[in-house]
Amino acid sequence: MSNKNPSSDLRDRTIAELASLLHAREISAREVTETYLAEISTRDETLGCYLTQTRERALAQADAADARLSAGTDLTPLTGIPIALKDIYLTEGVRTTCASRILEDYIATYDGTAVAKLRAAGTVLLGKLNMDEFAMGSSNEHSAFGPVRNPWNTDYVPGGSSGGSAAAVAAGLAAGTFGTDTGGSIRQPAAHCGVVGIKPTYGRVSRFGVIAFASSLDQVGPLARTVRDAALLLEAVAGHDPHDATSIPAPVPCYADALTGDVNGRIIGLPREYFGEGIDAEVVVAVKKAAAHLEGMGAKIEEISLPHTRYAVPCYYIIAPAEASSNLARYDGIRYGLRVNTGGDLDELYEATRTQGFGPEVRLRIIVGTFVLSSGYYDAYYRKAQQVRTLIKEDFTKAFERCDAILGPVTPTPPFKLNEKIDDPIAMYMSDVLTIPTSLAGLPGMSLPCGISKAGLPIGLQLIGKPLEEATILNIAHAYEQSTEWHRKVPVR
Image (tube, rainbow, N blue to C red; front, side, top):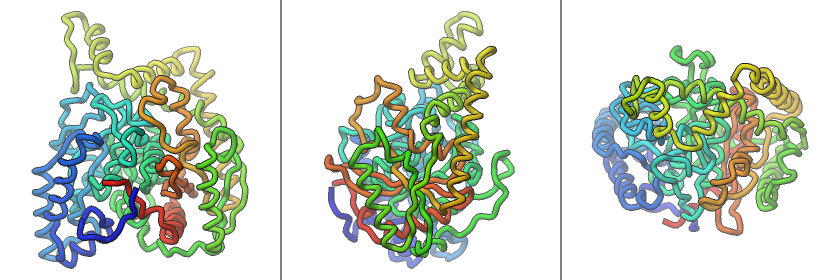
């Protein structure tokens, strides 16, 4: 671990800093892009963040950004900024695998809405990032193309499923990235890699062109080095989209303008259930110190209760697999993707294609999801899980009658070692016990660094907000970040 110091190395610059230099023409977008491409070539073989590098496209987009910058027209805070995308985003003309053999050679034919918005903003696409297959995992060990390693210590996991997205930012392999969060897949890896990640309100960002896992839960969001950078990235993709029936027709505020750093009088709730049995002592200490720090800045800290938290994991692992089993039925070897032709009938083709195309975790969740939706079991499992989901959402509604935001840990423990939990699905699933409730309730949540464990690995702080109040939690996070040094800690390069 080392302290980040301002230097001539462009990878040490935040997105906001790069934007200022680019707009002043003190540096070029090509110069920044070439710096990142060189670092990817040097380091990514060890870390495994990228599944596809788009080098030629990136340089062409950098040159186009430089032309825009020279003309001074159509400029945005992201013009010329090198980013990368979790390989779950459809990107026209670029391989999009979802880290699965079944889509290993699939080339997307159009841009999803978020990708199109980022392209219009003038960003530079460095490539597509590794992940747990079909976003099903908490450690990025379930990728068909090998695991991602945590840049703080390569013996440890980066978290999942957006592990490549978090590790790439932490390692300086992209200025910012985008992931998806279904049950914690942005917040958990952000915590494990010591970066900022935000899951917006469900429906705040369009899911059109994002490969579906669990459609009532999936949400698009950014990962970045600082809260301001995350705010800039989120604003670029947020907003209503008629292509997505779940998209919310609400105006998008300027999130960067909300970063006043003033938390005086804000009431922040600490759920007692987030600090109990199973939560590592180092995590509890770091998060409670963060709460005390905010209290010292003028916020009011109150203990609250979210009593149905203990039901969140079993509830999620009924709803999410059920939706996954339906969404993944489209991968049949007929329309696109892998086809394993055995010479037999159609049923044999389906079976062979899906058996060879899907990894063991995906197959497990499809089986579970199909079971809970089957005749005779729907009411006992899926319907009951949806009823519990309502109770969890009502817990938050009641809590927010007393507070402006909720603060707690992101994960029960600091990062764990590769292979430590791979053969214990229950232990792996419990990694998301503190992020799943927010997803079930459709609320905005984010992670930012708040400590370092004795093993030298990051610890994350979670902030949860009311629906569509991303600006509130971004401001609280920014106030904490700018008055502490945790965001300046980076892994040794």
